[in-house]
Length: 284
Image (cartoon, rainbow, N blue to C red; front, side, top):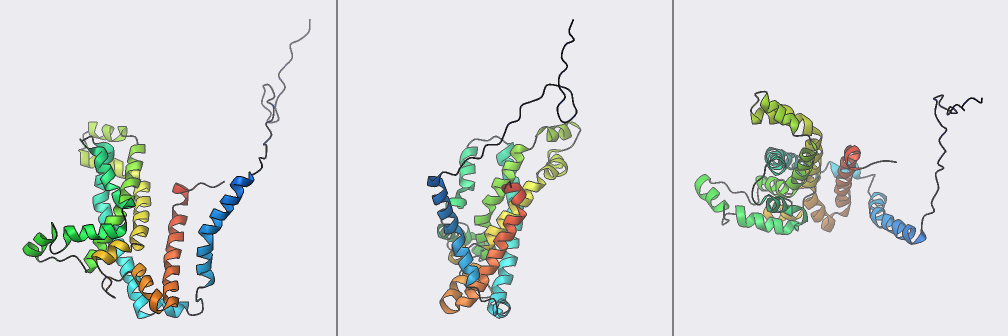
């Protein structure tokens, strides 16, 4: 009587039937897809390479240390940081409401919150003027009761940047909240924690990466804001002139200064993408 055949061990040393190998098949790239893809890559990269090629590298230190450029750079960094702080204070609670609560018209509210993403920035600036200007819906009361005037001031720059940047933070935090398991918050409340304590001690640590990513995106968007800023806050050197506005003005009088400021904005954009590569991009 013949003995039953034992399963042949695989190369890893474990018993069991040997599994057939699946060879990777290399697929050729279709020419109708390759050519438009390369053209699109060139369309996106050539302007950036031209900026690097035409950059005044020898005079770049003197350009960046000039009074006008330094004022615009300093104001841009301060206003973008302040706008991001405003977005954090108001945007995180708004994202929590959109993600965790049910109320009539929530879809409409979400659409209106994200509207500044697609709204032309100049239109946003006009809307801010009509709302917060001296004769605006709210601005006239601020001027009459408190003597606060926001247009064409540094505070107006912060408000304009926060208006266009906050939706980036809200979308990022809301998506993180929807991905987080709400049972942790429910468990904290059943153990006696108040809703705010559960949010502060449980929810915030869970969504911290999403908040950080949204804050970086909001900061970068605020740093590059142009249309709403020039419409609502104007273009006054040392007071409301940010880097994008300085680029626009310098392009008419001093192209080398415009290129220098453009390089700074390009470097900031690359740094933002590098910081978010693990969250928004995947590598092979």
